[in-house]
Amino acid sequence: MSQPVLFEELATQNGRRIGVATLASEKTLNALSLDMVHLLTPQLRQWAKDPDIAMVLLQAQGEKAFCAGGDLQQLYRTMREHHASPARDDIRGNRYAAEFFEHEYRLDYEIHTYPKPILCWGHGIVMGGGIGLMAGCSHRVVTERSRLAMPEITIGLYPDVGGSWFLSRVPGKLGAFLALTGALMNAEDAKFTKLADYRIAQADKQKVVDALLLQNWGEGDDKALLGRVLQQAERDVAADVVFAPSALRDNFDLINALCSGQTVPDIVDAILALKSDNPWLQKAVATLNAGAPGSAWLSLALQERVRYMSLAEVFRLEFVVSLHCAARPDFVEGIRALIVEKDQKPQWNPARLVDATPAWVEGFFTDPWPAAEHPLADLGK
Image 1 (cartoon, rainbow, N blue to C red):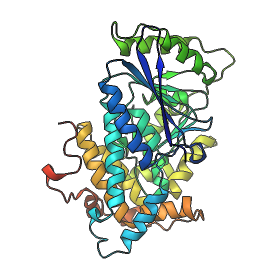
Image 2 (cartoon, rainbow, N blue to C red):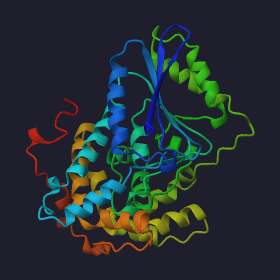
Image 3 (spheres, rainbow, N blue to C red):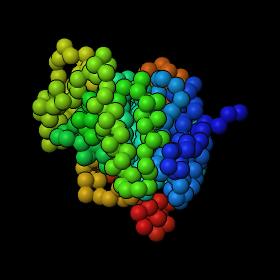
Image 4 (cartoon, one colour):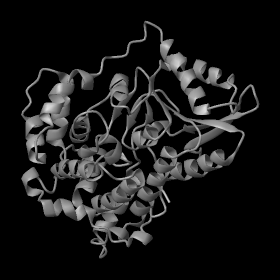
């Protein structure tokens, strides 16, 4: 059985090497599995300590997706087992979920705080856990076929993998809108929200790699050196490569108005009341309408709560919230309806926004671990 992540090292002209990590589960759209996390983390740590490694390239096999999200199949099975067990009220009881979220978040934090340049080539679909990998990279490339989204509301979750942190920092009220609607972002949208840094044609990828191999690594600021190569590639994009305009930029004032309500119901009602002949906006409204009401509450409550937290604190909080999601009904029901049985008819609980009381939302933040014993207590220390 082939490895789901492949590693190689490319020799540069001045003797340094570029570490290349390739997600290699094309049939699953490179969905991030625990096996992939367990392969990536030690390799990144090894490269970080190797003085001859100048930078890392994180990429994926295939033309369809960089990473379409987390691999939810095993998570679904263990959630169902946990719900049927006597320990169903203890969020620590689902050991697989605890391991999955702990190690995924550790990997994401590792990338955010990596000491060397990491170039993420985000071609094709980049969703959920894929954005978690991409968001922390020092240099993030999108192409004419990149499609980014945080559509967790459709499966009864919330934008995790640090999404509470980075969505709360995008321009205006876009973070609330993206969390509630799972709206698709193209390359220009990704740059506008600062979730990507460069838009480069997919056909030019090999030219970029070739240029990187010719650089004099280790003789100055390697992050700035990588930036200059990517800036040149961005300037050199051929005229016949079409990058669609940013829907988020075009609708910025409208989105800010829709999301300016004082309460979650105010914001949700405003979006759902929108009448538009714009297909992109129509899809966003439809996604919110079909999504889990509890996820809408939780997503916005988290963005507000983490506003002044450090990234390490955010990952510790998201870990607790994610385990509460795994122990409650919506997450498993969303996976069942959209991914496993695919009947597209999730039965959300709560079924209506008004039934998600403040006390219900607050329950997701209950941490069963003393601070020193939290599984992610060492992050940022």
